[in-house]
Length: 187
Length: 187
DNA sequence: CCGCGATTCTAGCACCGCTAGCGTTTCTGT
DNA sequence: ACAGAAACGCTAGCGGTGCTAGAATCGCGG
Image 1 (cartoon, each protein chain N blue to C red):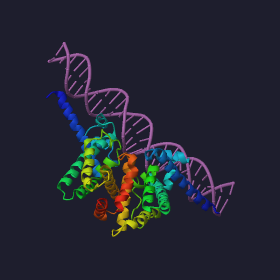
Image 2: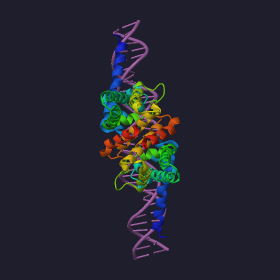
Image 3: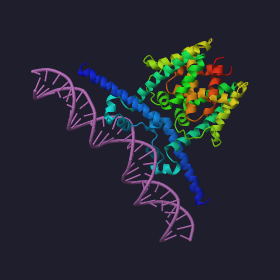
Image 4: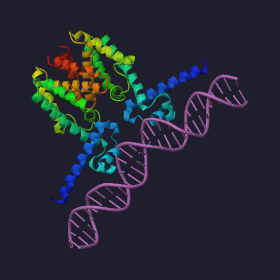
C-alpha cells in the first residue's frame, strides 16, 4: 500500500463524506439551508476543499441526486419482485420514495438539471429506474409503444408526487388518485 | 379627482410596472436572473420601493404567478370553447402554455409555494383553471369521481410539462405522449 | 534531514435579499 | 399664502451567498 493509494482512498472517503453531509443537511432542513459554509463546517474542512472535489454547489447536488437514483432503482426493483401486482407495487414505491425523501427527490428532478437524461452517457442508476418502469408497463402496453407508455407513467407519477409535495393536492386522497391512475392506464 | 385617488392610481400603476418587469426579466433570462437590484433598476426606482409594494421577492413572484393563472385560465377556456374535442384541446392548451412561458409556469408551480391551493381563499383565477379541467373531464368520468379525475389529468399534464421542460423527456414525441395519455385516460 | 510539491486555510471578491434612517417633496389646516 | 406634518424615496449598510487568489502548512522522496 503506497502512500499515493492511501491518499486516493482518503480522498474518496472525504468526497463521500461531503455527499452524505449535503444529503443529511438537505433532508433535515431543505436545500435552501445547504450552504457551502455550513457544509464545510459539517465535514470539518474549510470551504475551498469542497471545490477540490466538486466544480460547485450544483455538482454536489448532482452527486446527491445520483445516490438518490441508485436507491430509487433499488426500491422499485424490490417492489416489482415482491408484489403480486408489479405495476401497482412499483408505482407505490415511486410515490413513497418521493414522499419520504422530498429533498432527495427535489435534487433528482427539480434542482440540478445538469444530469444527462435519455442519452448514451446517462448514468446506469437512472437508466435502471426507467427500466423498472418499462418492465412493469409491458403487460399493459398492448399495441402501444412501451417506451412511450413508460414515459407517460413516469410523468403521471412525477406530477402526482410534486403537486402533492407542493401542497397543491390534498394528501388524503393520494391513494385513491394513484388507484384511479393505474385503473385508467391499464384499460 | 382628489390628490389621494391620483396617488393611489399611480401607486397601482407602479405596482403593475414591477410585476411586468419581473415577468419580462424572468421570461427573458430565468428567475435566477431576477434580483431585486436588477428589478429596481429596470423600473427606474430604488430597491426599497419594491418593499413598499411587496413583502419580498417571493411576493413579487406570487403576483407574477397569479397573472399566469389568469392567462392560463383564459387559454384553457378558449380551447374548450373552440375545440371539437375539448379534452384534447384543453390539454394541448395547458401543455403549450407551459412550453411557451416556462418561467411563468415555473413561478406558478415550482417557485413561490405561498399561493393557497384548494382552500376557500384560493384566488379565482386558480379555481378557474381547475374548473376548466373539471368541465372537460366530466364526459369521461363515468362512475369515477370527477374531481379526482381532474386532479389526475392535471398531475399527468404537469408531469409531462415539467419533465419535458427539464430535458428529461425528448421533445419530439411530445404529441404522441399526450395523445396516448388522453386515449388511456378516456376509456 | 532537507527541499519541494501537494494540500489546506485565511481572507476577500462580487453579489444576494432586505432594512434603518435621513432628506425631500407634497399635502393640509390656518 | 404659508408653516407644520406626513408621506415618500433615497443612500448606505447588514449579514448572508457561491466562489477563488494567495499564503501557509504538511508530508513525501532523495
